[in-house]
Image (tube, rainbow, N blue to C red; front, side, top):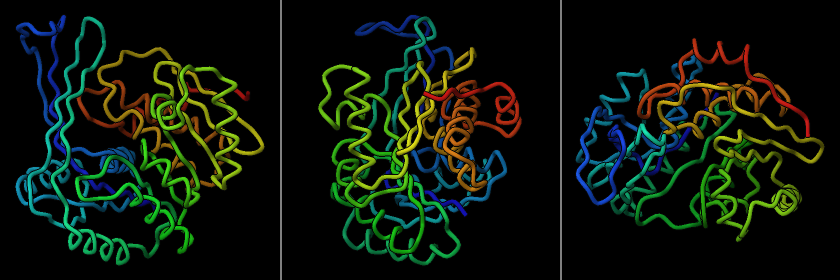
Length: 309
């Protein structure tokens, strides 16, 4: 079974504006609000496709009911430890003229050591039956940069394969525990490893060094250029198919969800990438932070192809 953790849940508020004017007055044509967080997004995509998933994490006293209702509406049961504080709100401004989304993301409220200990007990209690654990997203204040490394090591000790999708020190520290798969986007990858340009040779050199550290699979999402996946033996590229993009929110999380499905089915890495892009495409055609549906997933499975590189 697949599990996800969300340390820093949020409410995503999306505003749609035509010809966004920086520093000026803008009129909103559409708005929506979605319960979110990267692990939650992965769970939402899996749930809507019909794949069972355990959704674990932290919630906050103020806003917990809003989060729970939003998730219940899409069929997710959120097993969470309640912390003092307020669920953060992230603002997403989509300019329909350019297709560019501007994000204003809040930090998560402070989490105490006691809350973290309660979460770790929850994780232990829910570990039975887990084959895959998705460790993803930012962490709230009070959580150290080594936290995901500790979670990955905990999962490794129990034979649970981990997918690490994080940035900065969370990613660099997490690598030390040898997760099964990492999925940074290109910007996160460049930032974490100090790359100044998008030279393919430099990127591949770093990927090989990461594989030598003990990571089994690397998936690199590249926005409009698609995504790449590789292990020690082979590499594949998947280019996106032409679609009308309504929102980019959660596309990377959907990519992770699709790879989880392929892993559960025991498929090779080329199919892992193809499934991931299928789910991502299915989310890109939906508004706000709405994730892929089963119908869209099945549709794109007949359309998306990968090429060996």
